[in-house]
Image 1 (cartoon, rainbow, N blue to C red):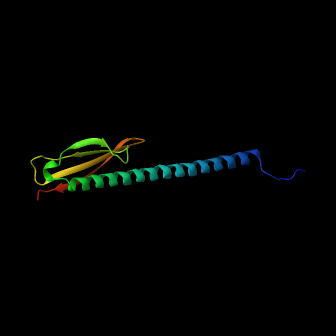
Image 2: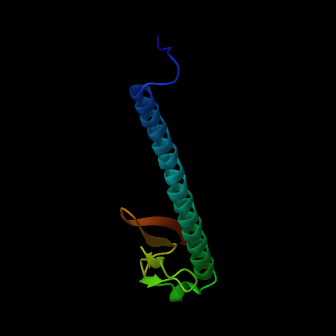
Image 3: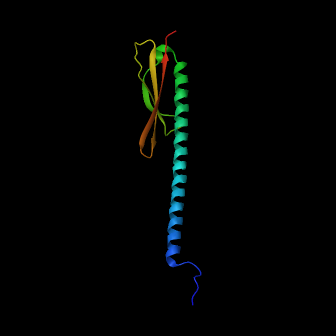
Amino acid sequence: MLGKRGFTLLEVMLTLILFALAVIAILNAINSGMFGSGDVESIRAALNVAQTRLEAIRNTPFASIANSGPVPDANFPNLSVSVTGIDPNGDPKQVNVTVTWNVKGGPVSMTVTTLKAQI
């Protein structure tokens, strides 16, 4: 009489399938985390570029502020910066700094707005 020792082929196959599904799920989670961290870095760089451009505008004479762009940033060539929304006769002038960059799904942009008054 044969004893029941070991696993059947069906049990081994089911175990391998479950293990493969678990590995695939873990790899997808790691992949999503890697892309997510890249997005955060792009947003942080875009915000730094926008703040730097706003500081430059704050230090620009009132009459010299004008629309410009989109222009690639000197430090981050994958980011383009445009300055819009400036009414030449307005006081205060509303200044919109828009930073645009490309991601897997297409272009993404972030806009930062400030006011500049004549003193």
